[in-house]
Image (cartoon, rainbow, N blue to C red; front, top):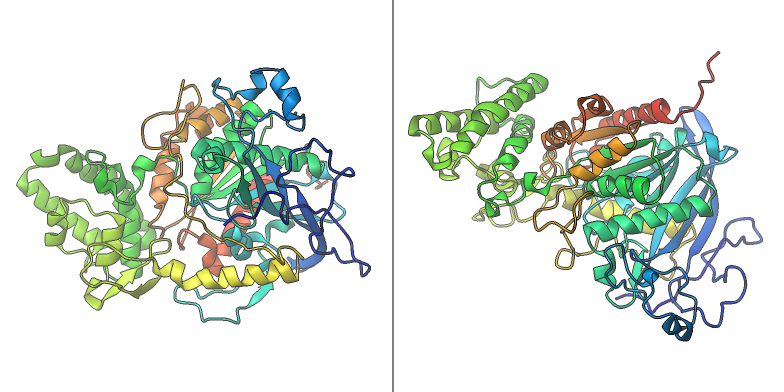
Length: 554
């Protein structure tokens, strides 16, 4: 349940006598509230100081935990006028969105963030990166506590982490060595809240979500004086979908060029998803782009039959070639596929997945993610992880067709959520009387229809934001993109991202603006400590090469 409008959301940076930032106390910015101002969600802020050792050197930082208020597209920023004065103006242009439709003037969202600023740095010389997870419906707790914040929770590499107490340590892989960081919780998640009539309709959707993040970033740049800083987006999972929309919105609607877009575990075209593609018959791409991940997973669990290549790099190159040639051609033939060819393809799939030939034939040579997770280790009553297929757990229902849960999520979720709830209150002095929502269920209310650049209206089809990213890259031909992916990710298979990037509608010259990095890890690449270091080094290097700072080397 959401708090009443304004309840617990009015605060600013207060400092206690000890010098620490006090908890998010009520504050009326600029004096008393205007008598005609509509009550609603208000910005909050709590400031603290901290330090972390990176590369053997101490880095001092200022942390800001708070909220900024954003509104739906078409919102009239003169809303503080009285209802009487608004009605005297009639049906003004500001009362409609870009499509001429009436905009909801009542809905609003307070978006929670935690920002870390290196002390002593000049804004124009210091990059700033906006980070968020996906879902949709996920907070940023995962990237914050597992990847790049100054503190990191320790979890088991590929098994269930022991229950509390959990271990929170200084994060020597924090990206604070290269950029200031802003972790953002999507509307309704974390400490973010939505309010007003039609609030779900106003913020829960591909386009609505992109607009909210665009407004948030513009407001953040103003609040903290960062308009002239090198700017980056870092999105994970659905956060990559958001980044494509957001990059285009920022550049075309806000006139904000980005230095780079960093993508982790990408999905831009939902027709390529390996999650239940059987409900979309005739579209065989998901089976093609997921096959390399099936092979990597079978390799990890020693399920490949004798004679299959045991070198992972060589194996994946072989599988990628088969998937995009013989396998794709066989699937395209459908029921017309010759029985002998069908048998041959089933044998090849067995060699690359470890699944029984007869099972593959009964599945019409098409196995989705849930089936693979259930069947790979089914002989031992074990379910394979979805977000990270290195993880395994006992099957809930030994007779089910597909996996009933994700062992990886079950293995580490408690550690992340528990540690953040303690850290945000004890260290950042925020949220003492509030509930943090790591994830919310928006599936039934999420508007998955999208209006890509150049389209007259939202398309009645599966979401595909490849055009958005392509438009952003063409609008700013100096925009650089880095795609990071784990070999063991069954939610957004690594080859799916490669395929999408190689099919962006951009000139060949812009393909050189995209770089690819893969890791022996899963969806949350950083859940593997060795992969986290590689990820940090790759992202830090990407930022250093694209931040347009003059070299200090003589």
